[in-house]
Length: 231
Image (cartoon, rainbow, N blue to C red):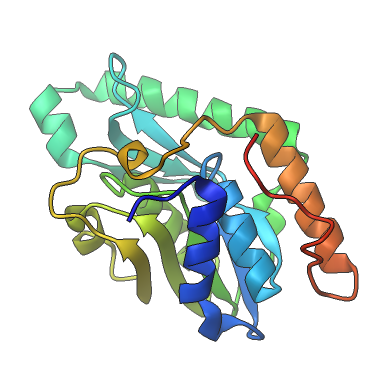
């Protein structure tokens, strides 16, 4: 299975999550690539869409490879990827510098998007955390721990495609994984999409605003007026 784009992946993922329709659900997107996927899930479930400010902590020379991840909040949570840190021989000082940059980027996005996920009502609700894929799973692990800290009743990780090792390495705080595709030989998330162009900040702002407006109209999404296609 190859997804045409993130919209297509989100529509397929939404069908797999259909049993949550009508329940007390909040859909949490991991920026930025997870937002178009999560928008489709939220629309299908008729649930609010919020953004969860989680940031991958990449290797200095290879930022696409996660040596950890950070989720902000009253008590920020850092998840380390010990295999990568050990293999790349990353000193603590280098990791801490990268962590500081990740936190600064979260602050930048929070101001730019005009959203504060720390005020999102998660306690005693079903939290469905959505991303466009998982390679190492470090970002998703940080997100799960952050959502658990904020009192979610049930936590579901929903991703179109993931490596088998990432799925098997999820924390105990996770209640359920919904993953459409777990290839035996996993290279990169982008390999499972025909169109995997980068999602810009403006696209994130637009989709969050449209999702909020659509949900406010009779507490249901109007698919005629909302276009989540990636441009």
